[in-house]
Image (cartoon, rainbow, N blue to C red):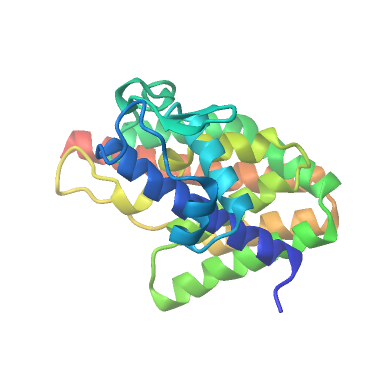
Length: 243
């Protein structure tokens, strides 16, 4: 039987899947600007999810400027060319090392504070979620699989533990650019990024500090983690320029 954090994680996954599917349909022209989307009831049947999942998925599309809700009439598609996705971070190139560095510098401004707040405010259930996602990263590493999704979920769990909804919301906003390891390319093919060999140790230090309720130690551990990534990417960029 799943516990509450697991149920929430599953719900987020379903919401993401539904919103991504509807987004693809809108952007592909399946629903033209001004055209009404299927009813909430119809969408629950098509996607085999609850009404709550559909509502949250629609809310994501609405925040992206892809749909609008008309009271008593339903949900209508908008012009994807004019969506909010053409706003902040829409021009992010997740394949460029220089932009990965920019994102890491920006993340440091709020994720270090996020770790400290999580240490002071986390609930037992949220601590369980952080530990579970930390273990998931380790399992991916053991199997030789990409840690892209499990890594994001770990940082997202820390953000949720701040008890400040803006932290996970912002992390979601910049999601496409914060875990770029799997798709980074340098300016020459001779220089390739490598996975962080200390990822699990660095995450473990963050987990331990949050578990102990030590805000300063949590911030120091997150600083070490992000600074290490910055150093590696700067070395790759420097090597690519010299190659």
